[in-house]
Each structure stands twice: as structure tokens, then as C-alpha cells.
Length: 474
Image 1 (spheres, helix red, strand yellow):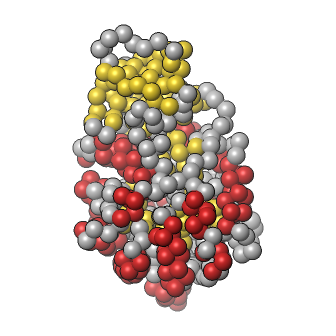
Image 2: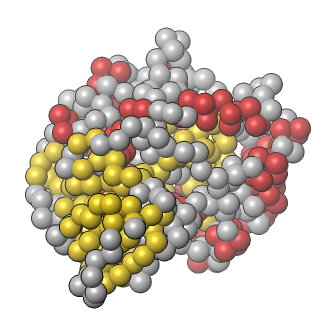
Image 3: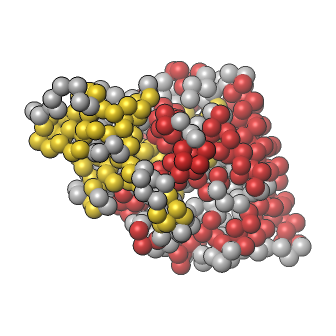
């Protein structure tokens, strides 16, 4: 007997969307059968989905938890932990989150992962993986040499910053030479290198110029974190990756110039992958002028309508691969404590809204194919970060991570509908789909907007395929 059967749902598999019954046992998908062909399999519980859309549980490859906010470093204010962020995620149909394990001077690399894993253990409603992260100008050779062992242990992705972001926050930039060394190690070990790419020289000069001119209001953020910075930094890191033969994942693409650089590299057959965030594909720099304009901000900045429109164009055509959030969840008071380009808090609460926004903006408004919807919300992130096919696909043998979306609903969303913060930048946004059930490894976690299970997420092991590492595979 099966543990659970979900019947009569419009199920999106890699071969398309079809009305299927999904049989689940032991946390895995064990059968996929066309609805109505023969009797429904016996199960402890059977749920008739009545034609609702059933997709793989979302994979958000970019969230931050329990981190001291860089613009509040002197006060030690942190963003919310895995419990709060994963609760929002599971309500929103996302079943896997990828956070950051920061290496600190004096650490063995394994200690960095162990420390962050301990924060997640027992407190997460989703499964989770960890990017190894470096925030130092130099990475000791003995630490670089630990990367192969860390990759063998299942930690298959690493991140660096090319900028210190603002003149006022703690330093985090890794210089290009050390990035070269890191890239050599990740490439040889079979890992993915993620990059926050902005040109530090351009950004810091722009800050000086804006300060000299007295233009430090939040509405000037896009002049500091500008299109030129994205163009130059993307070109540099893509060239370095090409020289090394390393795959790279460029986080939070925000400008048309970044999209163009990725498209050109992929056209040459280079394994370059681009990530966007929902708010880059919806809001613009004009939104900084709104009351509490900081709620729309993360780094790099929002930009023009032309840049915004290029985001969905690129997702539709396949130049960009994933839709993440850069989730940094705080309440409104913390998010809006900074009022200028020098002290604004980056990141925002968007994890719970990600799947609904992707469906509304992609499928409902732009005709995005349902298989491509799955690509950008789960499958591609799982492939790029080495979690596929355990995650990101509805297939026999894969984890039974599933999101059921009611696509008949049309409703405006407000902060009180959500769970990760006391505000949302999407207040009043009308969705064309809304999650009605979320299943994690066969367990119904949320049903009819009620949490049904305790936190029980697991740390995942990453193994990036050679296909993903050697060509633009998704």
C-alpha cells in the first residue's frame, strides 16, 4: 500500500503537462499513472486535486538566514533564521532552500559548513543545501586546498563577491587573483562557483561622486550600482572562467548588459548561468521614490524599464536560467531603517511569493510554457547546484517534493496573508495562482493554507553533473 496518492492533477513532467495520478511511498515518487486508466492505487490517503496544477516543489537557490545585516554591523541586527524563512517557503510551494556557510579566518572549511548546518538542523520546514562562501580579500592556499574534500562531502557550490557593495559596510570583496585560485579549485573538484558581480572601482567611485553632489537619497541607488558596473564585472569574470574552464553562476542579474554578456558566453558554448529575482523583473528604480522605497531594494539596484523588460525576455528565450529571491527576511522596521544609498538594507521578503509571481508574470501574462515554468522555479536550480534529479522534477525515484497551485484563483495578496515578515513588497499584487498544498518528501506540510507538520528538513548533498559543468545545459 502506498502512503499517499495525489489524483486528477495537471502534472508537469519533463515531457509536458498531463492529468496523472502520483503514487508516493517512503518519501519518493513510486508511480505516475494517467488518471482514469484503471483503478486508483490503494494508499493510506488519496487526495483528489480536481485539476489543479501540480509541479515540483520550488528550489530557491539564494536565501540568507541568521546573518548580521552589513548595514547594521555595529548593532549586530540579524535577518530571520531558517525557521521563519522556511515557513514562508513551504507555504509558498518552495521545498528546498540554499543558504550560505561563511568561511571565517582560522576555520577549516568543514567547520564553516558544520556551523551553518547546525543552525538549520531541526528548525527548517524545507530541505536545504549550503553554498560555501568567502568574504575575504585573500583565501589562504591551505583553505583552497580543502575544497576537493568539501566537494566530495557533498558541498558543491561556492560564492564570492567582486565588490564591497557600499563604502560604509564591512569588506567582503575577494580580489581577482584569489578568485582565479578559487575558480581553479572549484573547476578541478567538479563544483559550481557563484559570483556577486559588480565592478568595485566603478561602484565606489560612483558613491564618492554622488556624495560630493549631495545625491545620497535612496532614489539615486541605481547611479551607484549602475549598468556599467554590471557590464564590466560580468565581462571580467566570464573571461576568467573561460580561461580556467570553470562553470559559473551569476547571481541577481539586474541589467540588460548583464543579460547580453551571459547570452554571448552561452552562445560560445561556455557553462555560464544567470539568475534573476522577481523584483528585478517587475519593479524599477522609480519605485525607490515610493514611501518605504527600501522594501523594493536589494544589491545590485533596481534599474530602468528597459532593464526590467529584458529579464522576462531572457527567461522566455532561455538566456537566463533561474528565478531566485536573495531572501533577507526582516520586519519592516529593520528593512526601512536605512534611508540613503549609504545605509539601505539589501534583500527583502519574497520567498513565499516567488512561485505565485513566476506563474502570474510568466505563464498567465506572457504565455510561458509550463515545463519552462518548472525550469525557472526548480529544475534548473537543482541541476546547476547538483541536486537533480533528487529535486526539481516529478519522476519515479525522485523525492516527492510537490507544489499544488490553484490556477483558478485571482486575488490580491497582502502582508497578513504571508508568513516570513510583517510587510511585503508585493502588497496588493494580484496573483493568477496560489499554493493550496505543499508536500516535502511525501509528507503534506501545508494544506488549504494550514501548516500540517513540524519542521523536519534535511541537509542535502550536491553533486554537479559534468553536463552542467561543461556546457550551458539549462
